[in-house]
Length: 178
Image (cartoon, rainbow, N blue to C red; front, top):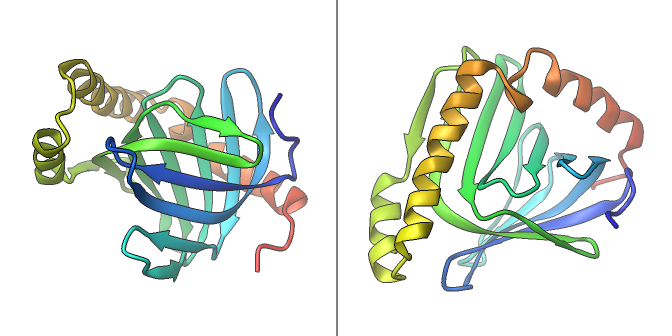
């Protein structure tokens, strides 16, 4: 059973070797279903593996599809919506902690829905260092293509109005994230 909308969760990502990668201090759940978990946050503390901390600069809507090998962070900026799509294992939700394994590759999608694939070198390096199994490497490559297909089809979080609708809902259910 998932926590109810309005609940604050913590998001943590790890690397394939189970080492800590990054955490997002507070995200407010907006929607949970058998298919998807949607959350929102604004100016939350992010902690990196080296201990460095920083705050996000804008509101964001995060989408985690159950069983999906990617998640999306839609950042709402003055000049449009930017998406950062993390390629990673399907998420796990235990209590108020959502976690997943980050597999290095990211797809950055711009407001005009053009995109770029980031961190190919990091993926190649970590793949060798941590001995990613061939099925993981293949699944990661499939996930990158799936993100691109979704962008081109305007599916899921890339649909017209999706982020705006969920941001309005977030404003209604959020708790103080200071």
